[in-house]
Image 1 (spheres, rainbow, N blue to C red):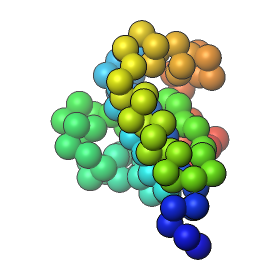
Image 2: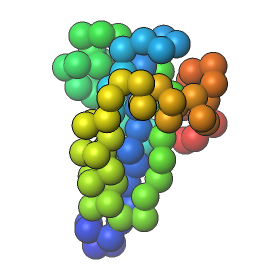
Image 3: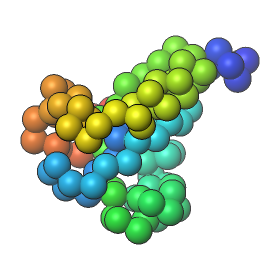
Image 4: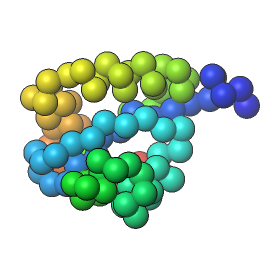
Length: 99
């Protein structure tokens, strides 16, 4: 499969309800969230204990996913909270339901 046309995910990890958030992008959501949970996904997630997948969106192209991740990272915190709460009011861990 062509790397540029293979799909990707933009996702948000958190430590708790309305807590610290991390926005990331990946081609393999299950693997990446597992890495975060093991403390190997990113230094930021490991430092702040971000193990809860609270939001994710699939894109047909990894290029589109990367562009959306960059856009989301520029958002104000309040906008990210609104985005999460539109789909996940209680900030539940979505890992088992998405992957």
